[in-house]
Length: 445
Image 1 (cartoon, rainbow, N blue to C red):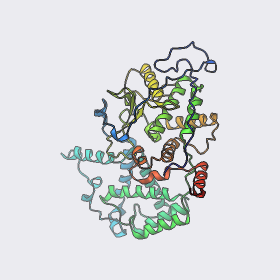
Image 2 (image 1 turned 60 degrees about the horizontal axis):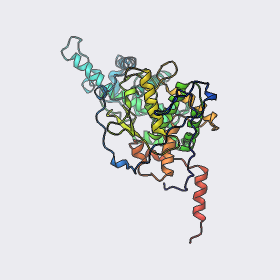
Image 3 (image 1 turned 45 degrees about the vertical axis):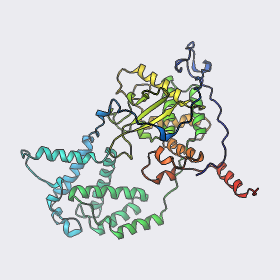
Image 4 (image 1 turned 90 degrees about the horizontal axis):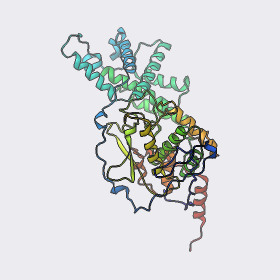
């Protein structure tokens, strides 16, 4: 998407931080209340030569790279899944599942149907294999698969069907049940089918041909045609909105620690095209997968670049990790200086580099709920209605801003999208549509 209009330069934000919210190199001021603090301005960075994204060089292996093995699946999820499989396998009807359209009940086709004594010499290796299979799917996905499996089991109970029945009639009836009785969106129905397919693979070692059946696909397409997907109402947090939010925070917001945390997180979310899960936790804190102090650092041999190491993400199935960079470039919100001050703050507050990078006032790791709650509050204080904004609005806003600046070819790489799904993130606001119309009716020279 080429740029439709030239945007006016953004004004420099007056940084009215509390006295302890200082930037490296600035003189400390007398401690007073946030409302009475005189403006403290970041020193403007020196002019930099043009920088190309393609001229970057890879960073050295991070100090915590050895700890970046896939995290163990939560024991409660693994126990529930194995319990669900046990319930399936212990029923006498499972022996006749082949006559109902399922796969062959031959136990040798699945490790999860292998029954060997506890003292068997291969028993430890079998347990290790089962554990490794679970590592192929992230815990949140396993939990959603388990929810789908429980719903599938409840469906069997409601209609007095032998469980589990993978026949074409049962699969298609289950889909219609989710559509008519549960009123689920087609995206949710597809998610449930993925869960059923996952359990079929565990039970029989292969996908269910009934779920991939052409009539099943036509049924899903028919439901989707009758109930079109609702439009995504989430609004983008563009550079203009981000600037307003940063200005609100730097005038004094909540506590000093919260203000500085919220100053750093939106900057990283926007310039790094980050998902909320790459900043905040959604489960118990685990330094092997969640942001730690050591993940945010000034780049070695280049003290004008800050790097942030993402240990794992939605599209990083192999968990190799990924670096994003914040450069010391001219900008009204001065992202480099803000993150540099935040790094020094966290290092002064904690002795261990493996401690959480983002914490609340009680030194607890920042959660998705905490981040979104404060985000909506800051938006309202900045004069922006917060109803259609979420933590994902930074990723949407970064893609939208990049498209408006003419960076159409770089968006997929910047946001680490594995497909062209990034195109659905780009929004066109009223002013850009108006400018496009003006271009269309412009008389040729």
